[in-house]
Length: 402
Ligand SMILES: Nc1ncnc2c1ncn2[C@@H]1O[C@H](COP(=O)(O)OP(=O)(O)O)[C@@H](O)[C@H]1O
Ligand SMILES: [Mg+2]
Image (cartoon, rainbow, N blue to C red):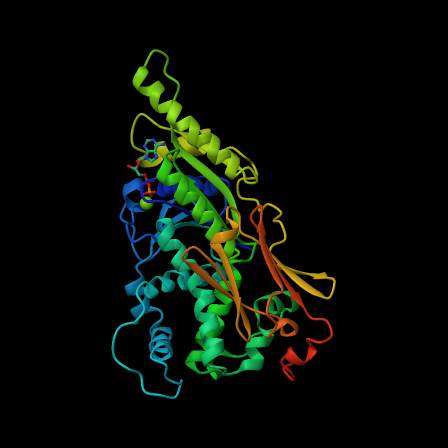
C-alpha cells in the first residue's frame, strides 16, 4: 500500500525544502518516490536545477518530480469531471444541458490536483508520494473540499443513493465492496464516487498524513496552531512538526543572542502545543537551501529517524461512545477553546464550527433529528451527547435503513 505525505505550512517557512528532503531520503531507501508540488508557487524545479512540469520527470534514481497545473489537468485529464461540476454547481440535474462557463467556485480547480494525486496513488507506480502543498490557509480550503462536495452531492443529487451508502467511507474499506462499472453511471454519480474515494484516501491513516512546517516566530506559531486545530476538525492525520530556521548559539554576539532568546520563547511554546507529535528542528543554514547537496544535508543531519515514513498509531478520533440513555460523539480538536466551538443540529447533520471553519457531519441514523443534550470542549476534546432513550423515539426518522 502506497504512502502519501502532505507537507504544508505558511509561505516561505521551508515547505519545499523539507518536501524535497523527504523525497530524496525516500528514494535513497530504494523506494519509488514522487515529489509533487500542489503549490501554485512551484519551486521543485528550482531546487533541483531542472525543468519540472505537468508530467513526472526523473530528478534522481527512484525519484520523480511533478508540478501540478490544475487548469491543464482539468482540460486534459478531467473534462468529464469538470462538466459534472459545472452542472452540479449550477444546480442542474445530470440530464440537463451543460452550461458554459467557469467552475463557479474559486479554488475549485485545485481539487483536480488532488484527484490527479489520487490517480497516481491508485496506479501503484510509486511507493511514496510526497506533496509540497500550498500555504496552510489554501491547503485547508483544499482539503475540506472533497468532503464538502460529497456532502453537497448526497443532499442535492440522491442518485444511486443505495450504492453511495454501500460505499460510504467506512464500509467500502472495511468490507471491500467492489465498485460498479463507472461507465454505467452518469457523470454525477461518477463524480460523487470519486469525491468519496478521495476523501477516504486523504483521511486513511494507513496511507496519508500531514506534516506541518513552521519557524519559531509569533505569527507563524499562531498559524501553525490554528492549522493543527482545523486539520483535526476535518479528521486529517497530522503526524509531525518541523521547526525550521532555528538560530545557532553564537557566544559574544548580542544581536544573535537577542534573537535566540526570542526564538526560545516560541520553541518552548511549539514544544508544549505539539508535545503529542514528533518534532524535528532544523538549523538556520548559512546559505539558501538549493541544489542536491543542500537537500542531502537535511537528509543526513535531520531526517535520520529510521521510522520517518512509518505511520504512527493514531488516537481514536470522531467516535460515538455509548453513554447512559444515548451516545456521545467524541472529536479531538487540539487547541480549540470552549467558546470558539459551536455546534448545531439539522435534520440529518451535525454542524461543528470552529472559527471560520464549518464542518458538517452526517449523523448516524439513530441520532438523526435529535438535538444534542449537551456539548462541552475540554483539553481540545469536543463531546456532544445525544439522548436516544424513551420519549425521544418518535423524533427519530423512520424507514431509512442503513
Ligand atoms: N533552514 C534554512 N536555512 C537557510 N535558508 C533556508 C532554510 N530553509 C529554507 N531556506 C530558504 O528559504 C527560502 C524558502 O524556503 P522554501 O523551502 O522554498 O519555503 P516554502 O516552500 O515554504 O515557501 C528558500 O530560499 C530556501 O532556500
Ligand atoms: Mg515552496
